[in-house]
Amino acid sequence: MEDINLSKKYYKEGYNFYQKNNFSNAIDSLEKSVELNIRNYGALNLLGRAYLKEKDFENSKKFLIKAVEIKPDYFDAIIALATAFEKSEDFENAIKYYKKAQKFRDWDFGVHFGMGRISYKKGDLDKALEELITANTLYSKNFELHYILGKIYYEREEYEEALNQFEICNQLKKPEELEIPVGEEIKDFIEE
Image (cartoon, rainbow, N blue to C red; front, side, top):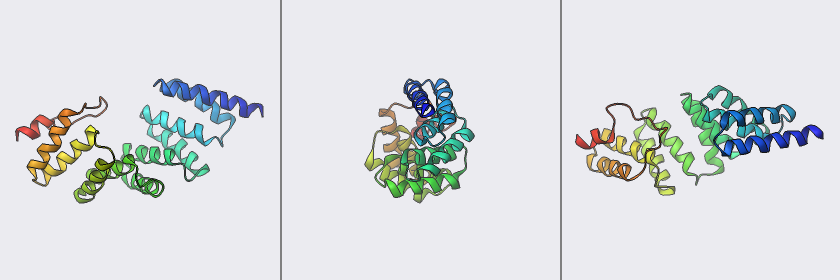
């Protein structure tokens, strides 16, 4: 019982660090929590998400897989796992987990956005467009969503719609972590 209580203490500590974007300290605390209680799927999930924030995709996947094994319907862990696979460019496994997430929450922006983003990366513009349009109906203030939609319309030579999407991007704030390849800046698309 003492281990369980100590595990909860470390989990709360890790959670607080995570909330403050102090991911390395969150990882330290959450690893202690998991060592004391390997069945704590909440700690496993948060640990996997902290590793994801630190761009350590292998450790992220390791702990998120354990969380999903313990609680197969744990949506937050499933969507984070899909993201970890996507970030490590394992698109097939990412799709597998996004589809699993869709079974639980077909109305979730992140599920459709993730599927659309992967479909675009794989070159399936029709599937990407379908998923991203659905995502846009769920939440329309995501810079990257409109950026990818603009690129899709541009590649399909639907320039007016591409321009509309890029103009929406100009109204939204670009997230710092989103890296736009040189030559693909919005102004370049608009100028063409």
